[in-house]
Length: 194
Picture: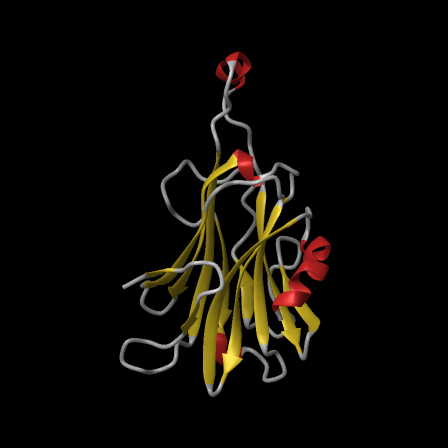
């Protein structure tokens, strides 16, 4: 059963039987909000290129990143499925996804922060039905969903993070608005959430 996360909420990443998850997918989905006015009827919806990224941190320092130009982490434990330049048609599926093999994440990596940014520069006011979700990649079961609501004048979101806790992993929904077209632009905004 999926949990709808609110900003700042944490969940433990373990299965219902108490065993730890080994492989998760952070999915991102969105579509362009319909334009308003006379010209909107002529031009239709504007394409919006949102990009999902995963920044791997070790002791508060960025150690690696997975994004549309670097699809696999250096150690192979985190993999991006590829760049979607336009979003979905509102079907609710993942438009971009980052797969994390938690069992293979190097011991020195203690946090993985997931971000989304508007590479084409549109604000989230121009995006609708945007969400990120965490899925048990082994079973396909959705564990948690964080819905981006309210639009806003920002061009990026620090979505969530998975971090080591005791012998396992936990997920925290962050949902912090930010400004930037790439993950590099977001690094100063990520730091307070580590």
